Length: 218
Ligand SMILES: Nc1nc2c(c(=O)[nH]1)N[C@H]1C(S)=C(S)[C@@H](COP(=O)(O)O)O[C@H]1N2
Ligand SMILES: [Mo]
Image 1 (cartoon, rainbow, N blue to C red):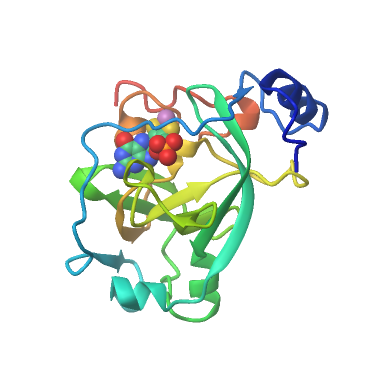
Image 2: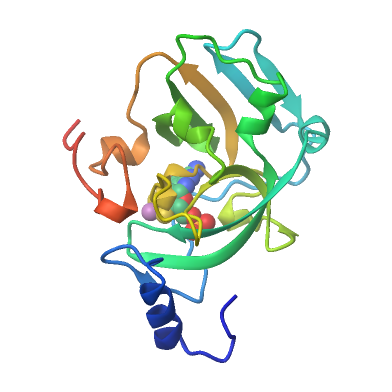
């Protein structure tokens, strides 16, 4: 969408004037890598599965080929990291949880209110169920037309972002997207995840700068 000849500063001014740059953020043309701990290696995906458990009518375990056969979606979003970089017009492809619910492939129980993303090595992050059902959230296998790179979450991660033309839609900082996702747990009560227990804000709205806070010291 941006003219590629604009430099970083000029691109940043462009998104700022379009009201797409949250407060305290700056535009990056790179794709920084941020996580705690090592990057999991998958020599092949024969042992990989995604599990849907907790307050659902029927638990699911999808192998890789089964997951790849689910209905797929593409999403173009702006992403905002709490470490103050934002990246614009990022293109993701994968599976929308909303689609899975709409098609009856995942059936949350009426008591389900929150979802915990469980990732390799025990990383977790939490959001309300309603948020994960929005269309600015995707279980992504591809970025920019290519399978995810190992450091960015191969083979599957959650991505959360903002739409260029829907500033009012609720969004979250990028840490609310777990890389190397292995399970979604549906729960009645909230439970702070890894960064949330380590001082990050539970709600994580980039537009109101919910960076640190609510569970601090938890
Ligand atoms: N499994 C896992 N997912 C994670 C993290 C992590 O430590 N482990 N860090 C989060 C944080 S803090 C950020 S900012 C984003 C960074 O994603 P990126 O490395 O693709 O930019 O991943 C999030 N997902
Ligand atoms: Mo982060």
